[in-house]
Amino acid sequence: MCTYYEVPGREQLVLHFGDVPEEEWRDKMSPLYRGPFLRAKGEAGRELVVGQWGMIPPNSKTHIPTGKDGKRLSTVNARREGMAKSWTYGGPWRKGQRCIIPAQLYVEPYWGTGKHIPWQFERADGEPWGLAGLWSEWTDPATGEVLHSYTMITQNCDDVPVLNLMHRTDPKRPPDKQDKRTVVPLEKGDWDTWLQGTIEQAESLIKVPSVELFVHRAKDPAQQVELPVESA
Image (tube, rainbow, N blue to C red; front, side, top):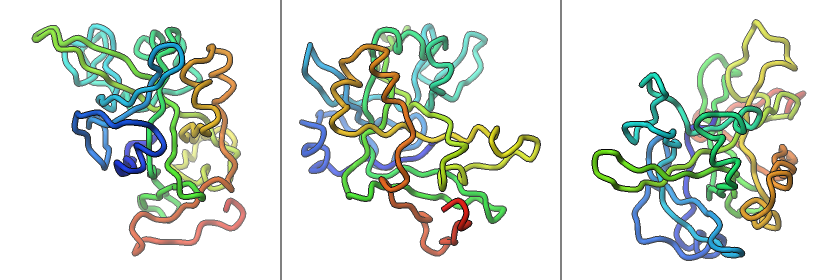
């Protein structure tokens, strides 16, 4: 799962995503921070709004995501395989509340050396990522305030070079059943389809990108290591 990314600068946001909202957000995003996301506006428009990264489930008593049993949930990532039937994500998915999350880079954990090395991924062309997500609204039962929240969709990448090196390997599972996860990048030409299209059209856009699309390295240059040749 992805639990850290960095928001593009304001000039890049305006250039690629449109006018920025007046609300403040964090540039370096971790769970429950507030960040910008792009959603549909009207029949053919788009708008950037600010919301909490970590979708708030229906009937949650607090903005901190909690389940029906009151236990805290991690909702920054939605697994594409189960989101349609999920109590938290199913409603937004069926209603077409899809969004695009601007990210200059995102980080995944590399454990190939036996310790956690934050590994960052950027686009090779220098442009920001537009990552697929879902958004929702939640009304605070105590104050009546309406809050936006969003989640980042993830997909399996067990057979994808480089990406399948991220995250811990489960020794109890075979290599092709590790269920390693990665985000869902969307190309600009597909943004309107993701935001305005049918469920079937949106589903067709959930796919792993070509390795040539991105550049990657350790976030801290002092931790840079060479990845295994067979998976690089």
